[in-house]
Each structure stands twice: as structure tokens, then as C-alpha cells.
Image 1 (cartoon, helix red, strand yellow):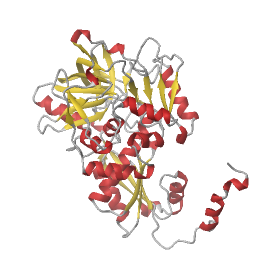
Image 2 (tube, one colour):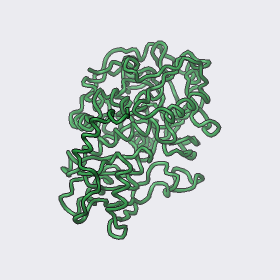
Image 3 (cartoon, helix red, strand yellow):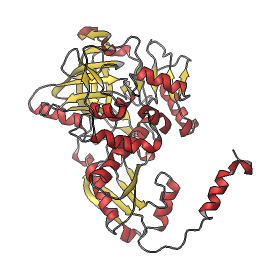
Image 4 (cartoon, one colour):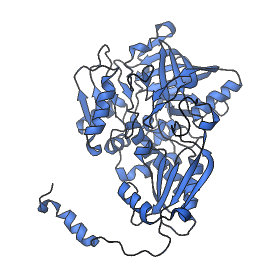
Length: 472
């Protein structure tokens, strides 16, 4: 059954013990980021909850972080499925999208502020990297744009810097759909209408942070994921549509052919992303619900909320392409969280031909060119690709570097990869866009000796009787 909004979802998380309320007043300019980081350090991933800061000093708006990706269990709660069903749910949603339906009004527009009445400093936007970020950043903005040619909607999550009472800096990587829309309008010399949603039904955040086919409407994918069409309302100041139960919506335009310095910002790589000449958004209208909830993604050093969300969503989309579209005998794919769910890709296959590992690598790179700087292919029968010890074992004893590795030059770079160029090289420099990939075939190429382990039936028996040995 679909959640009607973020509030219902958070209530169910709390009832399930997967949301932790922090009632102590906190400072948005240092404390929220620090509490989130320590929570990720101290609480084991399976038990890690979403964090709701009820009292933010100087504001009457609570802040929630980790609501989509504090843990895999939280991600599954947002998707309303079991961990083993995630890939099937995403594949079904992309194959059978359910278009949104427009309604006349919704709680997203209970309060409306226009032009000079807008003051974005009223929002409790946290500072995430104290002393290094130049301003507060919206990390969970779902940026809505329409393609000026086809009209197809795009919803993407990009970094958004607070620039003033009614201005935002918007950085969109060159491989993202929102950037394509802005650049098309730039060529025509006209501004790009934009709507930034902060806080919505959880599946909307999941699709916003996940790569789906370019021609597909993310809100239609969200509709299928939630099992009911997303209800949308027309924006007050432009023709874009936004989820009717959104917490906060910032409506505006991206200035045509205008760039302004933005950043640096603590990025998903764990390093400061350099300054960039980014778009400037003039906010013309702000709408929100009564006492809205401000939602944020915990970003920066992996593992983080952003890396977990990206990992699970991107894996599902890539798996569907490799298996459903191409029919390859791929068992599983994994973008390691420590790589920001981008740089390190592992694929398990049922190898039916010696060339299959390279075919799988090239197929993955063509579908998601910016991912998999390091791509490892392993056998599906005995390597758990989510167990780094198992992957490293395969790398150690199933690879001959001279024969089983190859470099693919001239490929798309991992976004914001600090190894690509020094930080004084701007994001617009072509050297930051082209990289290479290392493919490693870590499958068995001939008959191997027997594996040195106790028999499976013995291991299964001990696991079943584990507590009898004095363990818990």
C-alpha cells in the first residue's frame, strides 16, 4: 500500500523502531552533520535508524536525515519490500511505469510566498562540512525540469547552494538529464523553469537519486514503485507539476546562459568537490505545508545515506538492463558503497563463454558510462559480491594480471573524482570528463583445486545450533 506522504512514512518507520527522535535542541550549522556522522560510525548498518531532529535552534521546522538510506532496512521500508525483492521491483517499475495524475490542489500549497516575500533563510538548511562549505546546501532537493523538445519530465537530485533570500546555486553534472534540459533552453536563449521539491513520498526520493532511462518520467516510475499514481499539482508560478503532498517546493527559473561560482562542497567521494561555474536559480515562489518537515540526505564520506541510496537503486537499474534488455546470464551486480556507489563495480556471472566477462563489463559501461572505473567480474556459484573478503579472495587467486586485466581508455569519468585532476582545475575543464576503466576478469579460466572448507552440511548444522556453543 502506497504511503500518502513523507509524514505517514516517518510514522511507520518510528513504529517499527527505525526512526530515532532527537528532542535536544540542535544547531543546524554544525550539530546536525556531526550527529549524523557519529550515528553512521557507531550504529551497525542493519540497526541504523533515520534521525528526526525535532528542535532546530532558531527554527520551527524539524529536520529529518537518513529517512531513505540510513540502512538497507530503511531503504526497503521506503520501497515496501524485502531486500531480495529490490531488483525485481525496480525492473518492473521501469518496464511498466504508471503516469502521475493531476489534482486541483494539495497540501504542498497550503502556504504560498511570492517574490519579495520569499526568504530561504527561514528554512533550516544544514551546513554539512563546517569551515569548508561556503554556505548551507540542500542535499535532498528533487529538481523537476521538462525537456523543451519532447516535454518529458526529469527529476534528479543535485547539489544546491543557498545564495541569498531568493537565489540558489545549482550544480548539475554533464551526464544528468536536468543539464540536458537547461542546455537546450540556453541554445534558444531562454530561461529554464524549475521546481525543487524538499520532502515527499519516499519513492520519489529514490527515483530522483537513481539513474533511469533518459526518455522515462521518474514520477511514472515512482507511481509503479508505490503501486498507485503519484498525485501532482501544477506549480503556482510555472507549468511544471510537483507531488501534491510535498513538504516544501521552491519554484523558479534557471537564468539563461548565465553561470556563477558555486562550491566547494563536501561530496559523496569523501573529498571536497571543487568550485564550479554553476547555474543560478531565481526563486519566484515558495510553497509549503503547515509546519513542514525539512528532509536532508546524509552525504560526504562513504558510507553515507547518499551512497547507500545510489548503490541499491543504480544496481537494480543496471541489473535490469543486463538481464532483461540484453539477456546476459548475470546473477547480481554491486556498486560498492566505499566507492560512493560509483567507482567500484562487481558483477557475478554464470560464465557460459570465455568472452562473457568482457561482454558484461562493456555492457555495463555503455549503460552507465560514469560508473565502474574498476569493474570486477566473478563467478556466481561461490562468490558473494557483497562480501569484500570473497571478492578480494577471487582477485587474489583467480587473476593473472597480464592476461586477465585490461584498460579501456577514453571513457566517461566518475563525477567529481579527485584523482582526475587537482582541485584548481574547474569542473568544466574537459580533462575532468574523460578517464579510463580497468576491467578485471576474476572468474575461473580452468579447473581449480577443491576449495579448502568444511563440508556445507557441517557448516549449516553449526549455524543452526550456533547458540548451543555459547554465542548469541
